[in-house]
Amino acid sequence: MVNALKILALETTDAQGSVALCVGGEILTSRRLDAERRSAQTLAPTIRETLAEFGWTPRDVDAVAVAVGPGSFTGLRVGVATAKMFAWAVGAKVVGVDALEAIASEIERLPNGATAGTVSVGIDAQRGDAAVRRFWIEPAEKKAPLPLDDRYRVTSVKKWFAEEKRREFVGNFDCVKSADSARFLDSEVFIEKAKSSAAENVYFCGPSLDRWRNKGDENIETQFVDRAFWAPTAAGVARVAWRRAEAGDFDDVWSILPVYSRLSAAEERAKEKEAERSAE
Image (tube, one colour):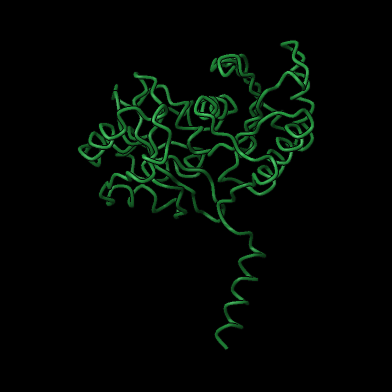
């Protein structure tokens, strides 16, 4: 039964990953990995310790949820590979979660007592860029974040704020309607609210802000979501996975793959060389 579904959630897109357990939509625990060691060294031991703490065996896990990106190459590979191997070994289902949505799911309050608004979430995309995506959230209502973009886009961190200020909001009904109605009840009402929100009601959140904070316009300081909600967590991954599980929306253990924020430097060079050869 979904109400008793036991979820093991993994988050390795951030510098310090985490592991969480969730039952029936309730988070039992969320444990950070050792920040001084690599995820590849600490993830498996932390999973084992976390399961043991609550008396779970690996086969007690019904579904493994994992943040699939956007994020760094090594961290994503470690998390996704671990989730796939664990799920295959015990016969569990698997759910790949957008790391930006996981962050949005954990935001409990907005600046200046705002009850709702558009939040632009950004994760480091290397080379001074950020992978960003917008969500409409109403923290007090405990509703699922409503994605306002189909997927993330990569932009310079320095341009991130200016671009959000200039962008005229366009409700993406295709992305909303493709979601299960149980996740986004009254989604068209949310869209209308977002359309009517002024530019100053765009709030910023995410680990990419660590590289920007105190370097930009001090007048936008109040536009930052509380620092406590910037980092992706396994608890956020579990919450998103639970909503998908309620709708029966799982991924295929064989085909789930990491979603990199950009090509590696080597891949970009290879692509450029291929384009040059094609142009000759």
